Image (cartoon, rainbow, N blue to C red):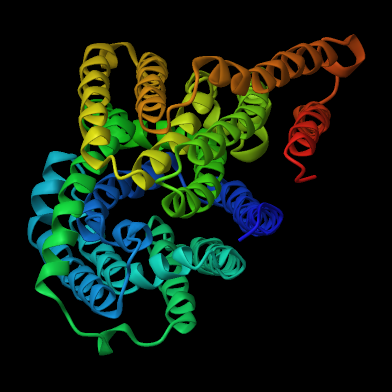
Length: 475
């Protein structure tokens, strides 16, 4: 494939990935605005606590099987059949285990409602185990147009549409549970329709051993990564209560929403592309550094927007009864750039096959976060948010160091990669903070102030991003 066709393919894939994420973000905003006015912090807290368990359990359902299919260079039908059967078995096993230990988990999180909620949620593990390899094959084929449609439709109809409808009917926290399951079922159906039935492929014991070896290292890393990203939620739930995790969960959701969607875009683009060029260090380094630049141009202004307009964002999206979300939100927003640097670095390390190198670094971050949040939990949600910021910086540093070792870029190149994003953030801070200090604008309500700030944000990001894309001949 020529360089020009590679760039064209990358640009097309990026556009589809961005379109899918934009549609998902729009649906998320609609869902947040409506559901925050229909449900209480306690009801959100019940589902947030259950989600902490679900996300941890999904690590074992996946067990690195999907990434193995994407990453393997000589993929064949026996390998696909083996991966599919392992994935289905793990989905069944984890679903059964969650059903059995649900009362213990509910007791640990001090929320009796969780017993039945977790047992119902176990359906998700069956669905995920069934469609995970279909998802991996779609990513491997770089079929981002189809993935974008699957993500957008499954979230807008499956989660937003179903959850809001159920909430209007008075289903309480079950509205969110039903929405999550519907979303996963619709997405799985879309991906299944894209490929032939994988159950017809045979198994191979050699492939099974290879998958399990890769999966063990992947799972070690994912467990550590999950602890590093969710330990704050577990501590809030167990020490401060379900209502507190409902409040903290909304703050975390708002700041991780852009981070998660941007991270998924770069994961979908970087992992398959670098997997195909993993033996060409120069090309891998260039892809990684360009991703760092793009993510910084997007994330530093986002961080500024949340910090300056945190109160307006909470009032607009959640309403007056959620005012306690504001301060944790503003602090957590400072971690956005560092979380996204991890999102860029992690698929790069995975694509280069550095499974175990990732794992020990994630365990360092996990232990650091657990220690900090336990120490700071008596001081409330804001103190816990600061612990997240500090460990996010440590995490980003360790992952950049790993990518430096495997792609062999120069430190001066990394410095240049960060500059456009830092400049964009500085311009956003001066412009947004300055315009909101104008006396007559201060008399406007939160919605108009937020609208003005967002207009400046869009112009600044567009200017810096367009200049960056022009330099890459992608604009």
